[in-house]
Length: 154
Image 1 (spheres, one colour):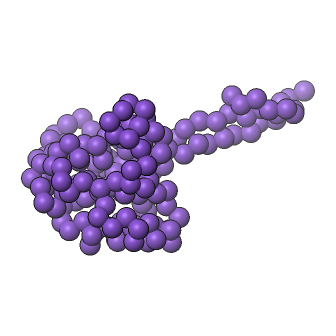
Image 2 (image 1 turned 180 degrees about the horizontal axis):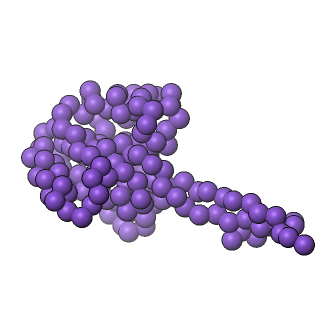
């Protein structure tokens, strides 16, 4: 509930952004992939993540584990391949609602591509991974604030 002066009241709540595109860091195999995936699915989003091109085996193994887990199909989608080639497609794709550029190799180009489809963009180094406060901020960055106004009845 938000305090307002007038014959109405309003309520604000966080809701998922939708489909998130992300890039796993190239120098980290499993930990970087989990750092890219976890904030998106914890906040209720689905994710399309590009695994590390240098170390793709952990990403492939994680995809097999997620296939047999209780996570619904399609919540986590792991792509392998050249992150730079896949990145331009993800950034310009109209069905991706947010783009996490933390592990991207050319974030400036991807940010310009994402601007054409009005995506929410999380810039590299916009949060601190080492502390719990930074992790919470990363989760909140992948959510939208929805506010509903209602008139008071007389």
